[in-house]
Structures are given as C-alpha cells and as structure tokens.
Length: 476
Image (cartoon, rainbow, N blue to C red; front, side, top):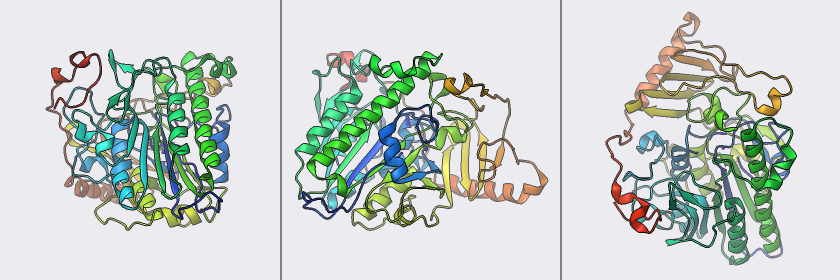
C-alpha cells in the first residue's frame, strides 16, 4: 500500500462551536503515501512539519500502529476493516489488469453514509478502476477528486502517457501545472465551505505526497539546501508541502466552525523506500518488505473528545482498526465479521489495546508470510530484502552510519524488547515453544487466505491511447 503502518492521525471532536448543528463528530482521515517513520518531526527533528507536529503532540501519538508493506493492501485494510490476505488484495494493483477491491465488501464510507454522514474523498484510490463499479463514487463516496492509480506526475497528473485525474466520473484537464498537494487542499476548502452544518462530514484525504516522483515547488527545497542528497531534500520538501496543505484544511474547518467537533486521524499507508529518499530509521527495512520499517507507520489522533492527550500510546494497533473505531465514534455498532478492533476506548483514555495479534501478510503465491502475536513476530519466506538500518542523509552527515546485513530466514523477534529486529531468535532452543506456537497460529490463519490473482494478464483495452490518452474505467 503505496501505501504504511508508518499509519498518521489528526483532528478534534465534540466541541461546542457556535456554528455546530450536528452533535455527531466530523471525521478527517488523512493518509500520507510512503511517509517513513523518520519523515515526521516528532520522530526526526530535521523534518519540518510544524502543523502536524502541533496536532500530534497535542493529541495522542501512536508508537505501534501498522499498515501493510505496500499501497493497495494498506488502503484495502483501512476501508474494509479486514486483512488483505482475506480479500485477495495482498499486492499492489496494476493499471492494466482487471482486478479490484471485491464489490461485495461494504466500505467505511458506505457504513458512515448509513449513519447520516456526507462522504467525500480527495486523493489516491489505488483499489481498482477497470470498471466504474470499483471506483470511489460507486463505493460510498458522495464525491471524488483525485486519481485512480498508484503514482503519477504531480503537475501533469499523468502516468505512462495517460491522464488520471477525476472529478467524480469526469476527467479533469484544467489542473495541468498545478501541484497536486495544493490542488487537493483547494478542493477540500471548497467542500468544507459548502458543507451543510446539519450533516456530519467524513473527509478522506489520501494525499499523493511523499510518493515518487521527486517533485515539489522550489521554495520548499530551500530549507534543505545543505542536505547532500537530492532525493532526500526533495522528500523533506514534499513533507513540508504536505504539512502546509493540511494546515489549509484545518483552517477551513475552523473558518466554517467545524474544527472543534472534528476528529482527525493521520497515518502513512506504509513505510518509506530508502532508495527514494524516504527514511524509516532507526527501524529495519523499507517499503515492500516485512521488516518493521516497511509496516510500522507514523500516526496520531487529535480531538476534543479524547479524554487523555499529550502522550504516546504504545498499544498495538493496525490499519484494519480504523473502520470499526470510526464507525463506533459515529454512533454505529460493531461488525463481528471484521478483523478490526474498536480502539476508541484505548486511544482516548490510554487503556490497554484490545489487539493481541495481526497479519503482516499471508501470500502463498509469493511464499511470503509474517504475523505478530503478542510481543513476537514470525517471518517466513520472501519479502525480507533490503533488511538494513538506513540512516537518512541528514543523519549520515552527522556521522550516523547505515548498517546492512545479509541474513536468511526464517526469523523470530521479540518486538517489545527488540523493535529494531537485530536478534533473530528462530532456532534458539529457549524459544522453541514460542516458535512452534507461532507457526501453528500461522497455519490456522492460512486457511482463510484468498490468493492474489496472479493469472491476470495486461489487457490492451486498458491502454489510455484508446480513450484520448486518458486512463478510462469501463474496459473490463
């Protein structure tokens, strides 16, 4: 899931603003793309994200929130409340294959609409678009402004020669040359300014930032001119631009009188890719791997309804928990068929987490498996490449060195005692019973796997040249 859980969270709830006409909280769910653990200012003082920093430190910072290793799986988990291995969504969606998030799943916006919410999405979808039924306005969103695929140019809004920018089901061509982060903030301001005060608002903003390509207005590069790595300075500039856009959204909510009754959740979809300039340091590994750096994401929640604030929550949390938590806050009831847990009591008071285990991935076709049970993490099979500890350029310039290792699994780690994954306990006699129990639990979970469809070939009908150089849905 280009999409991280480093997962991030920001907002406010149940205030007494004079403009408020609904008692239900407004919900702002912000997802950054490929934002690593060390790409936010509360984990790295060299990063300039002052607005997010203020929200995070005034709210609750999450220290053990997880996404999936890549974009599409993380977004599937977030919007369904189910682990992607149960949906056949273990891997990244391809632009030209006829595949999407299963249509029989009821998504978060659909559940919130039943509870009276206006639902809007701005940003990246990446959950399938070969037919319109897969796209956001057919999946519970009243409006959609953004792109369907995984990555594109920030200014031309094209990928592989095709335009992929949509306002609902209408292709957008008037934003050529406008930086997407700014375009998304402008649309959010418009939605908020026109919002009916009698209706609770759900605004889902999965930003393009800080996914490649390395593009950002020049003014955002200047504060990082001393960093001797162009990719890294670009990523830091992109993070600051993202921070400014989120401030615009917050200010719009304040101007409308909604902010004091808004719950904002911020998280990354997955860890960053060190070779692209993102950083998960000091965590091990990168995006698209099963190490902590690929899955443990920066995240926080901020809001007036939080009973306890200004602290770091160390309880275990996963992206699948967002749906049941937000549905509960919105006044709905829990769905026993979900993998997600209602975390509201825990994160609002600091109580113990109801989550005791989660799945990093179960992908039999790739022979790739990883689970967490209690303090222990088991990795078997693939996706263990790029397993070093990669310090960002600004820290390397201060003398902090990158460490690389060449290890083969399986792996067993005590994440509570060894969050950097430096001591492999697999095969150690003292941990034999834990090893057996973990493998037993993995085998139990495998029974629920829906394999990712690997037999789907690229369909020439998808090519944008067939539709005036637009990535048009409706070809499958």
